[in-house]
Length: 545
Ligand code: GLN
Image (cartoon, rainbow, N blue to C red; front, side):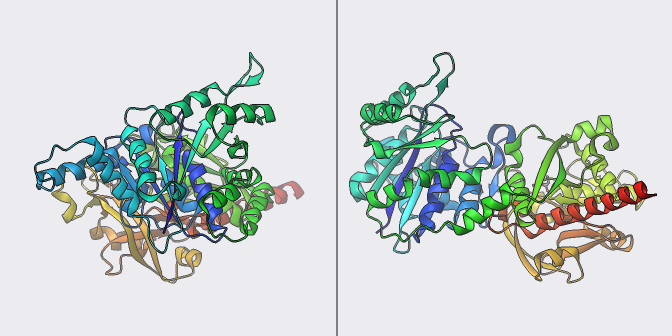
């Protein structure tokens, strides 16, 4: 029978519940246990697919095409838990399902209520992840204890222990222990209040993870233990990590969390094996080189909007023991200030995915700069579409070339809608989504990176390269080197005669892990290193002369 861990958060949002949950999953896996991860989001949107990246950060896409919360990215980067649409539920989805059942008459005339109908639905979603092949299901409850929206989820996890037995469940509460400068001390009162709220609804947390910028003293821990009714060994400190998020699991181990969980749930676990993880941190801490990459997008100041890209670049850095410095560049600024001013000196450039017209011309200019100055370039989704527009306009001489997403009447629609996308008016879940196969040309840089002919990558877009232009592009050197297996859709393009100019219609960033960096990001960093070495060489030659 599977055991259950519930992770809740209190005091403030953005405590890093997702990272902590992922770290717990990773530690249990490294003790030989089979883990499944899941998150509930208390908002009413059916999924985050329709939400602005300003509100919600990136939309993380799974193999099965579900559009999910970015915390699921942490789950995938830290663990091997298979993630599917059962791994992320929102209030909107839960209610939608219950209301659909009501319309079908499945409640046989009963009054449909939050308790038990909504809570039953939630519990059903938790149970879906349990099974003979699963030792531990980790369920993270988004939001903060005390939010009106979270109530049905908290009530459901309270009931869950009644259903499966208290000994099979563990409640972990993440809280903030702030340091008050004026008082010169850490304050435990917010934690006490937060746990008080949980206890009011019938949940006594088993473990408290205290997020803090300073170490807790014995007295702080004693106080928290006493007022929150938990044993002292279950007061776990999680201090801010300014170096890397990949340090979080190690700090939890130092504070005895894995052992505590194993003991409390009576799990048959092996020895903790952190060799690979320590090696990863060693490489992160001791880079031999450094490269700078410009990320030219329209949410430049907003890291969460490109979360997985930042992570994937870190992973690629690990692969080459290189510190990758990423500079976000606002694409509109490239329009107003010019590419030379903002992009000179970078060793590589990425134009990420996106929707909407704002900043498009800046992306096109940035790509032109990368193409003409031979700067290694990786275009992702919209980034590939912009590369096509740029090439069409400036190399093929097709004035006014564009994607029909931005100019319906363009004389040269080099990027356009697929027939099956044309009739769709509903938003959300209506794109080409999820894992799709692509076949690579063995004589391509992409193939050299992947080392294989068939790849499976995740998509999230409506528009495609217009095949009517394929030959014209190829004749001028921008070749389709990866296509769907039937050859109908272009998935990867590359520029001949450029050191490294690769653009893809999919999102490679979703499949990169710290212990398995994505081949294309690793390829970009390798090319950036090569460019840097070459420039250094040239500079030295000039000096000698
Ligand atoms: N807006 C583009 C499309 O829908 C690209 C989407 C993306 O970059 N994810 O095709």
